[in-house]
Length: 175
Image (cartoon, rainbow, N blue to C red):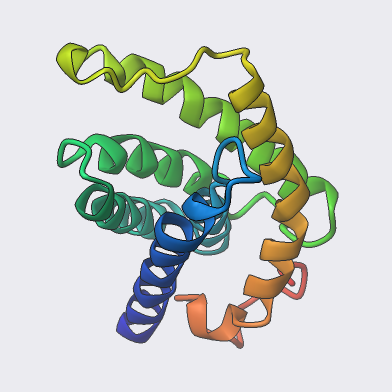
């Protein structure tokens, strides 16, 4: 179990570095796709709410340290998203195309709502960067749902290493 926490934390740290160092410097992107959010949703649906909280908090903490936003800003909403998607870990089949697209689309909308709500706690920092229905949000929404099946499939290759469940107890529907 500790092995899967370490592997997923290192994987999330790698995604934070890729997202903040490489993808943020590509001028083609209006907004950087949120690969970390997609990975947190996958890990939450795979392992449950506690694991979702831990992966959401650790990814948010890494983002807070690297991006320079107030410490805890990303932690709050990513922890909430990890917990909420973890509630559905026993009832959602995360293979295929429909469920990754649906779950990531709900997660992206939920992220935007939570960012707007949390930004009211930091009024002087101007964290509410763009509106709910804007070109930036729509671009992030579309790119996240297009990348979701590919990232879910890629993470599915490491399912045994990322899962806290015993491989003998795993249902074959989580691919």
